[in-house]
View 1 (tube, rainbow, N blue to C red):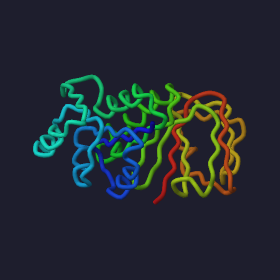
View 2 (cartoon, rainbow, N blue to C red):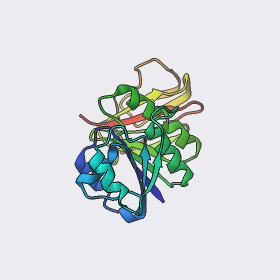
View 3 (cartoon, one colour):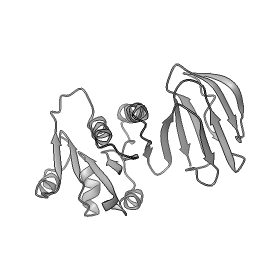
View 4 (tube, rainbow, N blue to C red):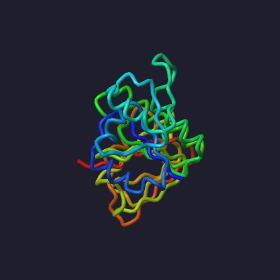
Length: 215
């Protein structure tokens, strides 16, 4: 079963509505302040995770009265962020796919960490993506095919998560590469574009952050 995680960052309400349409067909994990976004749409999640230091007490009390919700409360002084704990729960639930909303926003420390923790889902062989109004973010450690009419926006950026990504070959892109070693700390992979109906990313070693984005 798919899992939707609603974190406490910025959430575009229309995106949330879109991903809650088939609520009965997915697990839903709310992360602390993410409950406030669900409250606006009168949506009841399956799980709630957090230290509950940033959510409105009234909203928290409302959800505590819902017997079908499983609460996972943690001390505010802990090693992992609430979103990380929610992701680990989604992995434990053996999710077929994980989508995270509200993982980006004003706090760049949290946003950066949320991209990095996707590695746990990658290692568990579970497709996992972060979505907001302008971006779809995920990790890959092997080849991937992209269809021009299905990517999230005009731009596809490739950023190494590991120290290098070796044997990187891009076809169907405006800026192709052939058996290239892409090191961390370079902007070479930013703002590429798909110019064919189908584009291919091939790689031999490493992990890439893939960001499909639009203005």
